[in-house]
Image (cartoon, rainbow, N blue to C red; front, side, top):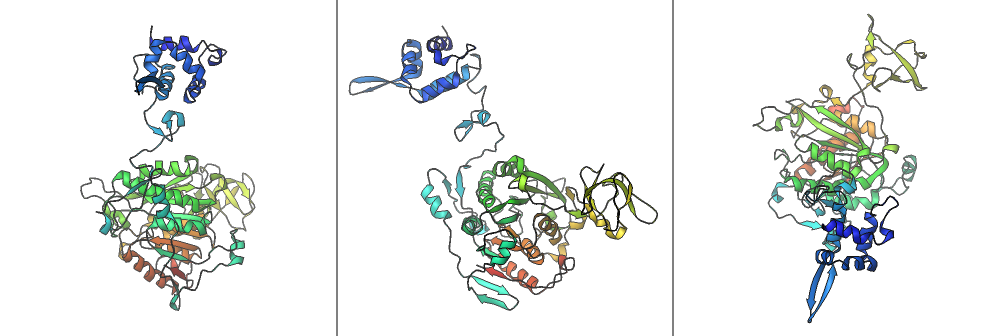
Length: 506
């Protein structure tokens, strides 16, 4: 008699193990096995064949005892309920588990790699790229992880204003401003730049800023070995994933419920990063992928591999919300293109016409054949449903919402940048304006050349930046000093920037 037939015969002796339609209650039986149920074990021991298969004989002090092999029994019962004898034991399930469950039981797509269950401190400077990184296992090294991630004291803090550097005199906490932006009255309202390991900095910031940051923008190491900063930009893939997972998990906790994360990467890691972000933020909270056609001559376009037959001209910008239902986001408006919406036409005087339907009284319109694109019209225009409407002149043609492919207007001028990875301020301006209101908090914990902070300051947002490298840190101080004094470069003229503000640096 085959083993499963013998097992089924014995189990059917207990009516509690059989359903109304005559099938064995697999999960009831497995649960009984996991709890060493005496009735189940007794049924199994009645059969010599089952006793030999599912029990181990242990001898000690001249006596022998039988020990029930729970895992073998549960695995056999689960598989044999579905498979013929010719199948392997993994024919029904992938043999990988996460949190004790098979992937099929979790009903999800997961990214699995070595050391996923570890914390990596992650030195970023190239001086550290040969050091032996320690992967602290989340279960086995709890004491070490607790010590590593406990909040750190900020040292050597200074305040920088128009009058130069001053000694640290305590954080400012503007109660009135905090009430206006819906944050606790004791929230820090200073702009901050922190020099140090960003994982440790994020955990130190968590006590003060958990659930308070409106927008996080990061432009992390692309793992390409071509970073013009002195970053360690050549992690192994598994190390890079652990490095990012640790930081993204903590960063998510800093976001306010309606907040967004913007993750800037290239195609070397974008596909891994997308699945990792899905796991941490939830696939339902993925909003969009912006393809930035940066061109060959600007920004980091020169960093493509010399062996590549197809130089890369674009980068990927993933947008995730913390909670899609509460998400804050304003339309990003850009130049009108005749190919954007098929039913917009121009007359000989340069006016745009279309048929549309009324949106809100703020004169917001949703174009019928525009795949959800929106445009804004003059207050002088009278809007009626289904009539031909005069929209905008050439002068005001920038009011059509942008799609998810960005390019020409954001290509940086390589001559105006210090690093070839430096992003143009106009790119960050659009993202920050879309994801925040004035005075909201913006965080960048891969600060690099400091574009995020410079743009945030010019847009009257509070910013927090974290940078590990001394060279980049000093460059940030100089750049922000110039912004505070009223620099006229990049977006300054667009936003009418005349200087002001300040920052606390540690």
